[in-house]
Picture 1 (cartoon, rainbow, N blue to C red):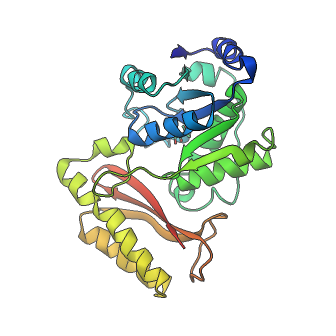
Picture 2 (cartoon, rainbow, N blue to C red):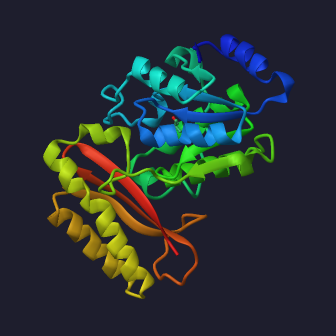
Length: 284
Ligand code: PAF
């Protein structure tokens, strides 16, 4: 695996990789890789001739009081994992390479960005959409792979790719990969490492309570009452606060207040100790 950190080097290497018409799968990440990311690499490898991974802790998607400085950075360990997965190229730009002095553009995707993480993290999805659009333009992959754990992020990226005609039919080649979970059901996340042992144990109530709530909703219980009970269960189980717990249309992410069988998604963000966890599950 080769690692490049300038656009010139990236373009040179991509030209070589594309020789003979080889296809490229892009897996954008912020590093601190875990099994969830490695699953994305494997999916990309099974669908494309070459995998290009990017590692870039994108400052524009962090709010002023968020964990940008503390976000784990472990390029040597990450590189070793990517080599073991057979990744062809690692794109690891510096902040200056990604956002040179004078950089002045931002992509804002209305609608799908508005609620949930968009409401509790203002500006977050503008930062995500802008950097992902840049990554797509820089790498020009045939397919790109994202975890469903960040379900709203995936919806924002798909909407952005459709709206901006990113080399159609590329929008159909943005692949969502199901969330990888720990044995107790907690969704894997780079932020799980912030959890104290007590909080890590308590955090497992999140997916369990979500399954329970979904069973109640699909059995016909009123959505608002189920979500209230769900929030109380998390608070009783050791969570400190709930950013949101909602049922949304699986495609538009419009809030669903009465479930009628149209595919929906339960979306949750909740804080335990200093850590904000997100999760989502299908409701069909
Ligand atoms: O999901 C992430 O790791 C990031 O939001 C992404 C898509 C790499 C953009 O910085």
